[in-house]
Length: 567
Image (tube, rainbow, N blue to C red; front, side):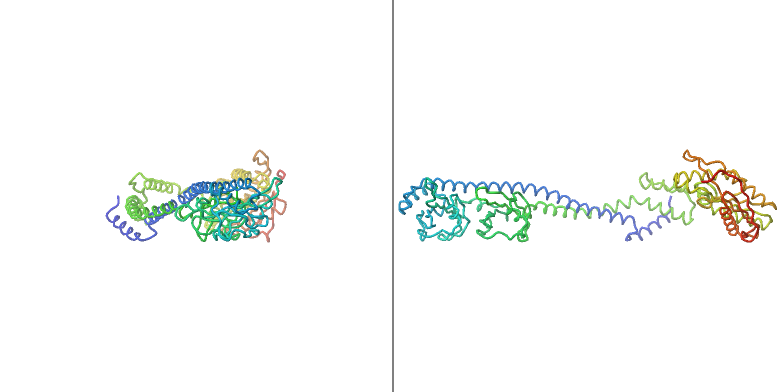
């Protein structure tokens, strides 16, 4: 257990870390607050996206239903007037065409029965002059309308809906319709025209009486004339439509698109629904600003923001108290471990306070400490031995060679260094792979180990390079080294079987004889050079250099043992 001094030290450390980002408590507090805020932001983002799509779909269906309803009413108004004109045109007594009073009286009877055209009925002769009208408007009788499009189309023998225009007589926006009056042979004798004011009570009344939300409404468009015929929320009658490229959704509608979409009107984003009016070629647009459609999303944003602001202080206090309680054992364990590293107390298991994650961490630390103490010898072995073959590595070889030379300086005598480089090893790696090469190296190490004495050192110093240290040799060091070299060459006479295939390996051996006057590096360099002499002289041989770095100046001796054919 910790003493009062320990708790005092813990208190000092806690105070130091109170306002530091190095404190895990502070980091967890920041993480928790960040997660809280990110959660709020995530709810706003994902819910907004979900609700936006949902509300867009719902509002689009409603707007399209509204547009189709109004389009159907307008289409009915136009068809009703067309049918009236057809009935009147087929029943007009042709002899009345030359009698203004009779024609006017006859028109009055029909008009009074079904007064669909607020600006009356007009009969034009084939020159476009007014023969009769009812109700009679001052200045209309005898006036020419030959330049009007509906007159020109009716002369061709078909019903025509004219372009909405500002009436010459009534001086209000009107929609004229015309149908030819023909004899039995089909010859056009006159043209019957019916004109309705766009703002008349019995015509397009749903267009002007319907509104959508606070700022939405309906717009009636004639793509043929490129005109806004009328709208429910603004006096835009007979104004030209938008230039192409200004409003993409409007451009699509002018080209025949019918359905729903989002457009931008004077900087205001609007959801629009477009429906056709078949009898006239017009289309109706039902529109509503998206700010109204998405108003519930804005209210949701405000709710989440206010809710998050209320939660922040409570969450902060809860995190502070909770983290202090949960992390106290961890901080206490860290203090205990710190003392062990400072050698103020011996290495010993840390106390486990609670069986939670911190307790599990403490138990894991105790197991690691135990493993570290147990594996110290194993780590030392790994640091001085080759992991593949288990032989001493270059570092351990150098240490033993230094010890052997130091022993010779005190007791005289000789030692020998044999440097072995495998012949034919690279094809095994290239053809069979590195696993086969590793297996061959382990087999080489096993055979060479059997060829040397227990007190001698066999080390692996490179990929396919081995060194044998023969220490404590007498005056017959040369003969002893040659004997060991021959044994080493003999172990390569038998093929090496790896992955089911017999592979032939050989070795070239360089030998250096030394005493207490030679350094370890000089002996290794001499043996290495001698090995290359053996390799250059045909491989599968050994080459003896008498003395340190004496390969180039002293007599060279070699001996060859016949071995199996090398790769």
